[in-house]
Image (cartoon, rainbow, N blue to C red; front, side, top):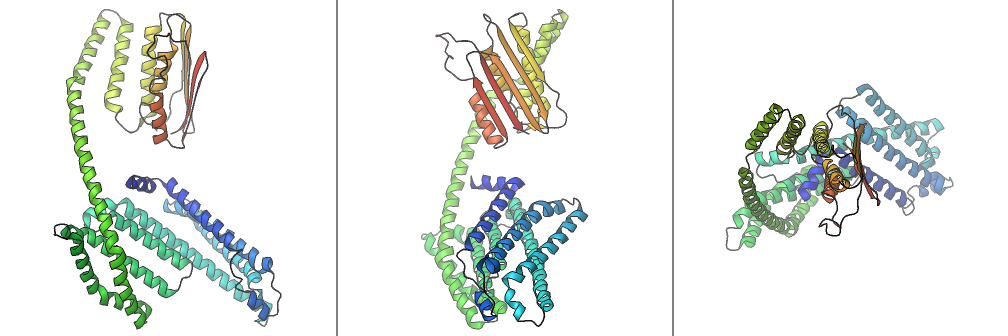
Amino acid sequence: MHDLALKNFIEKPYEQHKVEFWAATAIFVFAVFSLSTADLPNEALFEEAGIPFHYYKHYFVPQLMRYALLYLAFLLLNFVVAPRLMRKERLFLNVLLILLTFLAMGSVIGVLDTYSKGYLFREYRTVQQTYDFLFQGSFHRAFWLLLMFGLYWVIKSSGLYLLSNSADIQERYRMITRDGLVAFVLWMVSMFLLLMVNADGELVVFWGVLSLCGIALYCYSFHSLLPKALSRKHPFRDYALRSALLLALSFLPVAVLVLLLTHQEDSAFGFSVFNVAFQLLITVPLSWVLFKRHLKGDQELRVLKKELGRSNANLDFLRSQINPHFLFNALNTLYGTALQESSERTAQGIQMLGDMMRFMLHENHQQKILLAREIAYMRNYIELQMLRTSTSPDIVIQTGIAEVVGDAHIAPMLLIPFVENAFKHGISLQQKSWIRVTLHCEQNKLYFDVYNSTHPRQGQDPEKDTPGIGLENVRQRLALLYPGRHELAIRETPAEFFVHLTLQL
């Protein structure tokens, strides 16, 4: 289920955008609420400059507008500009939007700084010098924010590429696991967030090296250490000892790496000691637990595949009992005989039945088919039923099915159950009956209505209290295949049964 949700997230940009939008909105709301509890960083500076400090003028309103500006700029760049640039649409217009965003952010931040950093007007000789300093800083800040957004887009694109191609990467590099790729993507996101909040340099280095070491140990454990340990008498003890030896060998390289990044010898060697302890106490046991769960899942999957293979074999055996080629040949023979005997209505019915069988055998097993093919099947079904009821003047069947233009697709056998239900429950040979079916498409939306008369069922009717054919099944399929993209209304009165379906194709 986890893999399915991740796959849907990767393959559906709408899901990605929804997560990004709500994450950005949550951060914005949290930042706004934090204004009421945060310390006032510049209050003392105003007092030193001899300028009265006003909470709303010099702190709350500038910060609120700054947060709103960043939030709106992120929405514009992330959901409008960047996707168009990736698709190479309207390049000049989108580059112009980036430039205008940069100028707007630099200008607005500069104006807000004249309030939040008003104490600087006492530190420079002239007002113009203060403005020059503030606006230079604001445009530098705006440029840095655009760079951070570019880094975010690179991280997001790289992460989606890694996750969408995880199967190929894992096949090529056996040591890299799907969970390892997810952890690496999360590592990139965490590094980006630390840079965004201007975290201390040592913290960025320590977290970056610590988490990368953990990811590397996890992947190597899955690839080599854990499979080898399972063949031992005491698998966990053997795995822990091998991991401890590996971490001891990595002590000096990790210390040298941190030393090169921080230029602090004591911190480098102290961090390397902490890294060994952290990996032994956290990563090693966690890798063991996840590996055991992985083995259990693989075993369950093998059992399911075995059962599925047995079921497919039984299904293939049942299918072999009725050769579809024999049925088609028999229908063609009956069709030719009906024409020879001038039985045009019979020949027409056999031809329509053959088309419906061909649809059921070949197209019904696909995930999506052309909407025109689904409609053709439904028309054949209705016309075949009209041949059966055409001799009854009290039965009226009306259709208003518009021609479909374009290559719209739909899940097969999604509309016909409503029509089947109408003919089963709406036709009576003893009473006046009627059925009306309408269908049309507008702007990639399908509108489908089925009306039919209803008749009281006899007490001995075994289906008196049963629902219509497949209606519950259709409800479930719509919920699974078109979540949030359909509206289904079913109403019943003593004289009429009505179904309305609106479907976003």
